[in-house]
Image (cartoon, rainbow, N blue to C red):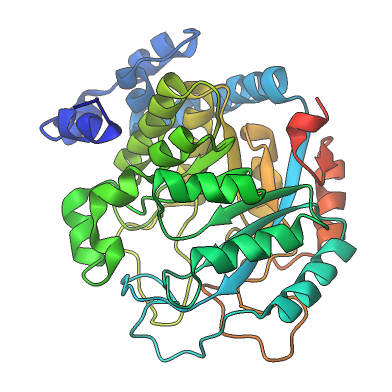
Length: 370
């Protein structure tokens, strides 16, 4: 059988992370700082408490790497929720099956209204999202939405239930350029505890989704872990390792990494391992140095002040003017949101903030402007 990323998970199953972090020292971090390419252990060092004292120097290095590979450019995009029907019961999600919320799937007429409202803001990159319900939001429906949206948007990405290689190929043929899919947690045992019902309970099928999308020819693949479910250093480590794996075995794609932290939601799930703003900054900086060519996204889950402060640390994409409700942009009968948004700034406000930081906001795929 071919080697897969799951083999990397197995490789580290007996690795003593606690002992490694306990032995990490500032002098080890200093040794890593001058290296051009980082090993797996080097990446772990940058995520350790021993790196805290060098965070400013590491941030400067991350900034130089980002400028060299991406320029001072931030791509802006908006999420567009098509449906919140879901057969899964993920403990942390506002859309989980057992939550007594209003369920809705946009009609094509409603989608046109949502698209019109988003396009008025100048946004030209949309991320389409659904809950996991093939009966309520089948692949044929998603393709129909993509074909419609191509008239108004230059780039369309999806964040939907995992698909087969052939199904991803169908979406690409319809006009999809990018996939976002979070493993949520790379800890297989914890994953099983959090996903007890529905197709999402299949850890390996979800883990392999980015590889299937790459095999189908997806141009952008964005991965991440939902930070707060497990210890952040290990989650960020496996996310970075996953990105490195995709870059190595599928060199034709652009790999991206997101850093979503759990936010309040219907159901009031409380994260067992919350991380501080400083730890989030450390995760971004370490990942940028380990993955110098990866796009890095920070969404409106985070407050506007924090997003502004983190722009210079490696970010390349920001969501703007986001709504997490189905019908949230233009409809009066919108649903409950998937989670609470921390940065409620308008697209114009986010654009102005990016300008104030000395960066160029772009409203379509940055690859077209460099």
